[in-house]
Image: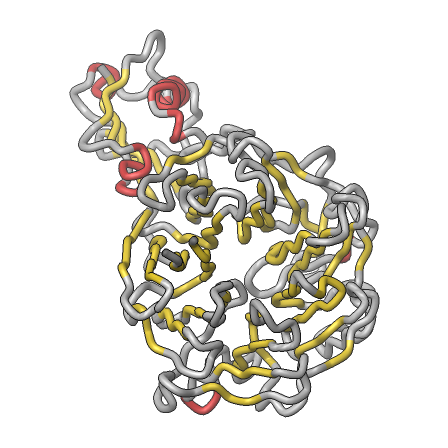
Length: 371
Length: 98
């Protein structure tokens, strides 16, 4: 029997939401790690029962939790995150140099073939990898040590590496996105990196087309068309058709092109979803209406998806890692809000219903398609 | 026996109920107590003190005998009441809203 498992990270714990393939009746498990911030929970494609959770606290630091039974039980792992070699400075908010300092894991990217091998994007921005299921972590230092590193500066949420894409077709190709540095690509499994931000225009920096300094919020790729990348930037929704060599804006008729998440339909590489937010000074949806926007043409032309979503008196945000798609035949979409609702659509966004309404503020949503 | 009281989050993490009792050989100091705590409950390594520097985390405090000992040198003796087990050594998450 097929089903889905939705992994939700919140400000006060993790929740696991499960349903069969109909995606109508849900079981809710949690809170796991109650009271801790859970930045991300991710499952291994190689072993769906292997889960990793980023459990973090301003008081007590970073814990990586691992489950080997689909979230029924968890074990904290002993691995720590130490930067390799001499730690140089990046720019602080006031422009002064500041040494890199580890704060938390923002994102796990489990590899497709080995449940023990996982990449982690962290704050201050760096890329780590474990090959032993979290017992130990090693930095891939070439990214942090890129010649532009001293010019990187944090976004308001911190200088986080929040997006990791492992190219499914070109061996050794990886993408990493950092707020607020931009997108970087490696073609040699992380041994070297280069910025791929040509075509981005960012009004918030002095040189709007600078090599780095762009506040990229999230990037997605469809596995069937890995040369195509979709990006939600601070402002602007962008697309690349050449694996990031150049970008063009596809915001089109969106009511606002500010936002955080972006997602791609599991079976239709040209069907893209965003969730527009009013502005960078007002991080809530526009006009009190919670609307997902869908483009079936790879951008430019967008339609609002509202059925089942509140269309008045709604003032929530949806964060960068808080939207996901399943890969059932009728593609399902999921997103979580800062108001604690997790919404699901079992029909590619045409209609929505809440799975839960009153969780703590949602930081991340991932979904596993189970067979 | 040294008695240690953990903050709620660390009790949950370490699956501890009530106080932790520790055997400390030699001088009873912040360092020796925390070394013994981490040896008994390895999941707490890095939670109270930084992994690499061994410095107290910024939002963690140490109290005992109605005194804030957070800024005392880590190798200074703790109060005799702590060393004898009459009073607990408290590890506290500093207060903050939310």
